[in-house]
Image (cartoon, rainbow, N blue to C red; front, side, top):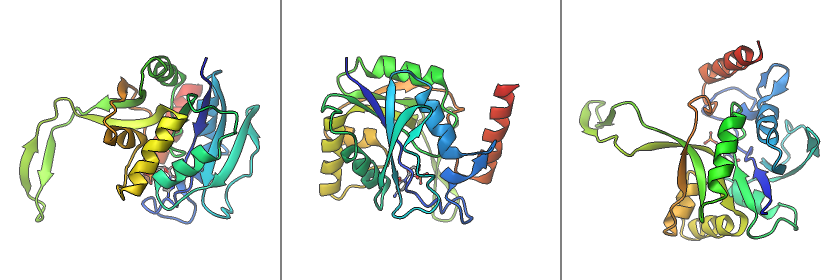
Length: 231
Ligand code: C5P
């Protein structure tokens, strides 16, 4: 059976959040967010280890070589999320084969449930391309004009919001990200790189609780949801 490793890009400097500390190192319950994220991924027995791309000479990276009994390898990330993921794919142990699976998951998305992760792995491993967690758009979508007025209403049918983790095979994902880089296309998730090659990853519906920490309100929500879960 194909093996599964995680790549957890953590080389962003979190400028949208504000503050000195990149958001993946903000502390909740005595642990940095990246620890919560790794714990969520490693909660699944099939996930063997993780590569974490961090920014160059990152002073905040805790220099783990293992976490929860599983191996963790850090590498230097890149200027974009895609470049960081590509660096992570290249830093995977040599014995992770071309057809083995890689689970790419944002360091700043610590609230992933084991139920969602299990669903993604079950469905994605049986798909020839791979799969991503996502949720259907439920709000009405407006297109804004330059003046802030509404130019129109967009159809929301069949529109989904892409989350992570995203599950793909090591070689296919590497080729897809290399192709986007060569063509100068900035992909905002791994699925987009695959789609550019005409491939169609599967959408697996996941919980809205698997949100990315982007604002201080998101951080407070994570702390609250975690406390609710534990009591
Ligand atoms: O900035 P954004 O929230 O989209 O970043 C998503 C994830 O990608 C974060 O975990 C961030 O640390 C990571 N990232 C990265 N390298 C970059 C930019 C973002 O690893 N150059």
